[in-house]
Length: 77
Picture 1 (cartoon, rainbow, N blue to C red):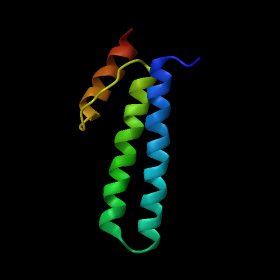
Picture 2 (cartoon, rainbow, N blue to C red; picture 1 turned 180 degrees about the vertical axis):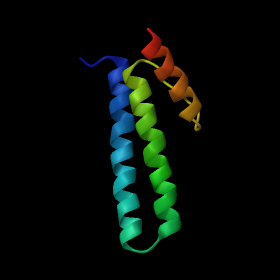
Picture 3 (cartoon, rainbow, N blue to C red; picture 1 turned 90 degrees about the vertical axis):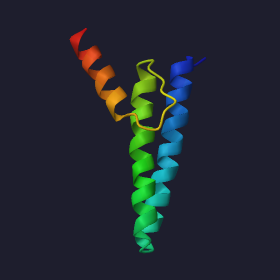
Picture 4 (cartoon, rainbow, N blue to C red; picture 1 turned 120 degrees about the vertical axis):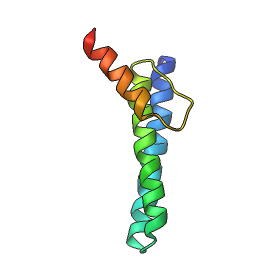
């Protein structure tokens, strides 16, 4: 059975893949504002996937500063 962090990471990964497909469809149909919005969601969910894999689950939308803090902490250990 998967650990909780792996389940959370997988859920974010699945959502990121879905958002990427939507971003591609928006781009192909010249809906650029939606493409940019969905692309931002892909990045956010991808960061949350990486954080979840190291056991650092985040419930906030702006994860970039938290990601950098966790990665720097991991590199120093």
